[in-house]
Image (cartoon, rainbow, N blue to C red; front, top):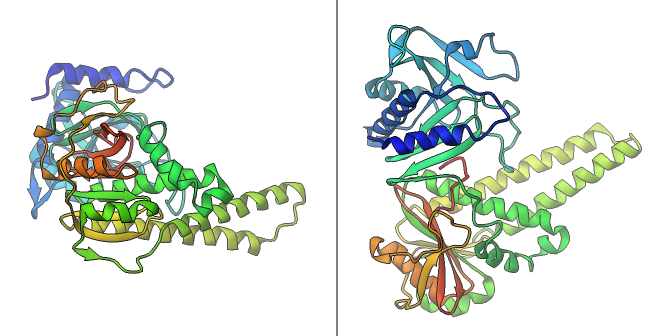
Length: 412
């Protein structure tokens, strides 16, 4: 099913990290896992795609009983054949984000694989908005996960090394919010926010992470949609190209929450500095700050989840730069854009080529037209079974298109 070049490339990517010994990967076993997980992901249970993660590691990789702060290992009393049917039956018992079904070469035939248990090594707790940090590092093993029909994410330990999605094999690349025109278009507006004026890069980093989290949560819903990010000063000019269906009055604003989180983070840093210098900080004061940070993170996550759910209704979510929803299920009605649409800079896989828009449907083409006529906007197009494309305008003749804004994010 998978061309041998793809399997060899996975093994080559695994071997690029020379700092840790890791496990030696066998070509046939890797191919077996990739194909079995992929086929399992095509199955449906109760009208939902089966989601599963499989980790390649012999029981000997975990010689001791788990202690507090270590990965939890579940061993079955007998081994099971590694088949699609077995994975379909086991998948509901294990969250693919936290647990990999553990496989190893069969004792009778080392060219085949057996299921011997499961390894709990969550990737949660590593984002800015997780309530509590999770300090257990996933073991240095190969894990292949399917969270969407027709997709695979391939991990070495906690690091994603490759993705297979909608027939395309890609290596991880930085999200376009860091060192590209898309990030700059966001930043030049965010610089006018109260939070940025007070906290500078701290506020920008939080804001950027919120956009990442919004895309992750939207992708999890497995429903296509569009998110249009608009600077407030351009709302009037762009209104001609938006046909709203559900208009939101006095919707919640997210930017004030980010401002508050930055203030609490700053207060915590100042408190720690005082403790080092004087050693007289009281426990209740310390606890109040920490509880305030956790509460603020909870509100931010709830706000992001609210916005993500609005993308599940057919149409576009219109969002201000203050992260306030204006409407959802809106239709983008900008005229046909006659300029060029090319792949965004730093996208080495496409090498700045022109995007063939005839390969895409109404949702993508409407987004291109809208961005072409609304120069300050940034638009994200969420595919039901593929990546999230990001679009922004370079100049009067060019729209930039980033084909995958989720490349390094965990929910891919």
